[in-house]
Image 1 (cartoon, one colour):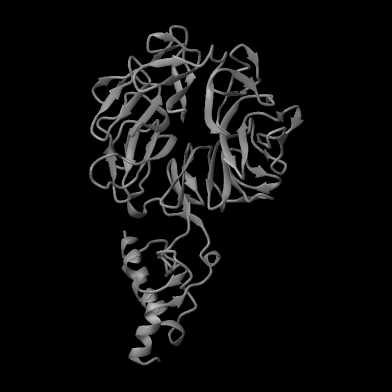
Image 2: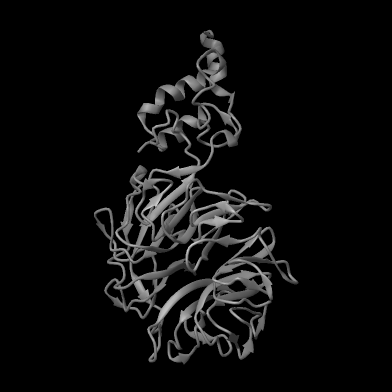
Length: 423
């Protein structure tokens, strides 16, 4: 046992185990208010509200649900790291896309009302109320849907299935300058499902074969004036992202640039290249969501193998090989984002990592769970204290996840972070 003076020195600086000793895992869905949804999650993003006072970033989730736990949400809801909040009375139809523009949260989908206001399939939330963007988006010939949002050249870009934006003709893609709508050339001849900005150009993916009258085959780039092809795919593109300086495209295709690439491929500036052997499994497999997390690319959708590795609906690419995220989910994943350093996963599943997690799950490092009961709370305090006391106490076992402020050392600074992790 160390003397008191020596203990005080040890308390202030005890080297923590390497980060890899506290491995990422599927986290309990109920912890810290992360209760289940009553319907599919289709979109997720992080929004930083504007305002004179410092406000926390909010996690925003959209989909086909009406409730989160007992809270009435109507297709869209916000999480402030402590509790869930409804955004007014939500929308009267599903939300498929979420983004931000000019400080506002933007929601797109298939609805006619947002809060108590008319909003044709797209609306902005300023933190207090919903507003329409001109007269929104629509079509006389087919049901209108908004699937994708992005900001490009200071404008909001919207993709989906529509023929009108405000009072102008716009085929499936349009831009909003904050005041009025504009077309992007003559648009596309099919739905736009994904939008991303890469190397100063807007990349669009979807179910179209032409863009601006040019043959492009499911993926195209817009330079601010005209559309052009970028290799081309054999079927619909559903997700776009950038990883390690390359454009990543994913979806329902098995050919990219005429070569075999199963549902995911990377563009090196000249040609499409593979990420391992791609994905397989199930009838009509696909990759529908992409995100970066902890230096790796995460791909999710409907599949059960990634390069021959069992990966139920979600996998991570480290630049050389695919790896599973535990046992994955029991249904398709449709939405990915990162909040507070943790991967947020939404879709049509009810289980994640073998535990009940309706339509919603989190993957990350279980910082603070020192007794292994999957809950951070007072029961972890004794182990935390023992870890701080250093080598003269039972230090090694159970301390791996004690560096709660993640600065590389376990010391008294971790205690405040540890307390904030309590349920």
